[in-house]
Amino acid sequence: MTSAVLTQMDLPGVKVSARGKVRDIFPADGCLVMVASDRISAFDCILGSGIPLKGKVLTQLSIFWFEYLKDVVRNHFLSANPSEYPEPFPKFREQLEGRSMLVKAAKPVPIECVVRGYLSGSGWKEYQATGQTSGEALPAGLKESDRLSEPVFAPSTKAVSGHDENISYAQMAGRIGTELAATLRSHSLAIYAAASRHAEENGIILADTKFEFGTDDRGVLLIDELLTPDSSRFWPRDSYRPGGPQPSFDKQYVRDYVESIGWNKQPPAPALPPEVVDQTSKKYLEIFRRLTGRELA
Image 1 (cartoon, one colour):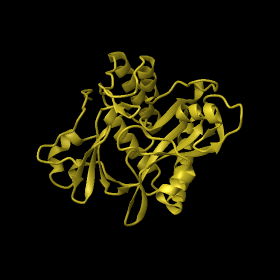
Image 2: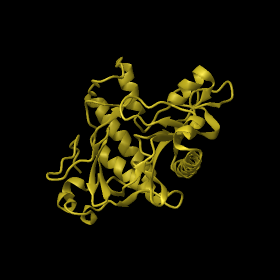
Image 3: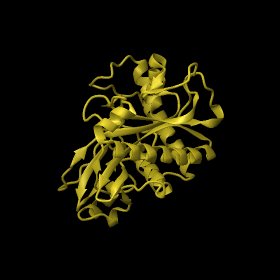
């Protein structure tokens, strides 16, 4: 298996409809081909180093979850076999294999749907300042990484540029309507419940995660990535000790590094030293193995 880093997917003769922080998206006969690069972002900035095999982990882990949770919420996944993609994509099979998905086109809902089962990250910072997270009051005296009595739905804006912003459920409903807001909250909590059970069975705590949804002519569907180490906090259950940060198999390791060097979280973003790149790649591969029970293809 190659460990070369892919920071951008270019397919000669095929236009790009969008390049996100990680994914390059191509129109495909009414559908989309989503390609996960090895780019990595922190605090909404793309860092100056790619992570070997990261795009393959994100794609193949998302596909695992889309299949596992397909009876919980409808999703946009159609195929991961480039030979089944519309023309001209089959001729790019070698580049696309393992890191691409053919998906249904949908209109994205401009909200990040976060579910927190444990108090960490920005949720912990907000709790320290206000005793709340996303407008919901929490009990006094909680410690960092404590398990919450019930998972909390904590939406945020989805910024086109700059940083996402935590908002309350009422603010979310005001932006997208009460009916859609209620549907997204219900779907998010159901996905979290099912996924956290599977993770626990495999020795992993799903501390928090974020989902993205879209709409098509059939209604709401789950889009983008799903329960990856880019979008979730995964902690090893056997070393869980509330009262501080936890060891993790996710992007928190990179966030901790860039904060430790005093970066101001504004472009230009720093490059990562080789040891941080290597450890991050190992963490992503390990969580893939633990959750899926198989090796990366």
